[in-house]
Image (tube, rainbow, N blue to C red; front, side, top):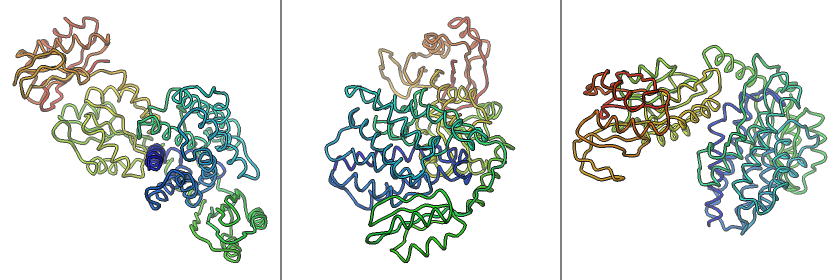
Length: 532
């Protein structure tokens, strides 16, 4: 049963990563047609694997890989989903019972995945997800078997990112639009999600996204041309001894982007055509059809153009921040935050409250700043409950959230912003002064009930009856990071220190730092300090 549980964890990692970037992938989508659904198709294909595993129930090790392969084939959506199903098929062929996640098995799995993907496409096109999986496989093949698995995955992801970046110049449609291939980028996102889950950080794709594995993305500027054929048609065909060659000939005569994968008893079929009825009529004469999906690509392209046009008009990405205190909330608005959710320590908002503000803003690209460690999980739950691209930057304090806003660029997508803002949070340091609720000794710092205590990045560094002394203790701890700017936010009832007293304390401990003091108005914390 262990293999079953581990596989569910990996699938959930891929789903989490795709959910975070689904709309970005949709917006990149210009090849083979600009129908803006590649991200959705990839997500639904992986989700079909999740559903197939759940439907099967807890499985023995030998049954897990075939179930995953079957789920991806039956649930494959669109051109990208069908190719992904073959990549999954290749991976599953190497991860059988008893196989461990090692460099040796990963090398074999990516090799099999690339072979299966190319074999599925009659006329492989470079500059697509085929290229990306091949480059990943090539990078893996060059590694020594004894290479640590973390280094192996980092190498594979870096090779995938480089391959994605190169797609822009490999296909005329991508070069004209100035974008990378949506399917290739989507495959990289999936692999980052799988890696994060495999390394024990599900939902945190940043752990897998080292700088070399991050691809800056931009979307097409201006309307896209309509596809040659109108309807994206896919279905599952089952029956004994299916006439595959005859079917492939029919699809070639009926349209383009034709794909037929599977075996003699079950085929997944995909084609772009103006007459889905003719294809389906042929199919029902030769077997049973199911999982029928027909999408109007011309309408999808128009919807995509309207969405991107609206994004260019109003700014692509918006930020929603959780903050307590009228002054703090106004600070976030001043630095470009589009929505504010009232909350913080002891008054955590719900996922529904976060989504209400997100929906009110109406953008498909959203970054959320929780600004409290107890709200990060709620924000991640909200991200899983919406079809918008909602990226959670794990800021755990108001000063950290304000530091993140320095890196915010509304013209960039949510994922790019999330990466830059998370890096800003990592560089920043936060101090908090509050009041002890009991006597205690932590890290050799003794504090008494009702006395002030000072924390830096969550670590207790000072305690005492005098607020100015505790503030200096916090500043002394922050001095280890050599900050250039100190931001001090005072509480709703005043910090019990005048601004000149606060400035003097900063000058004593950090004489080279610039100090900015604002009436934040937060409850519970007389003083909050940010250091950058």
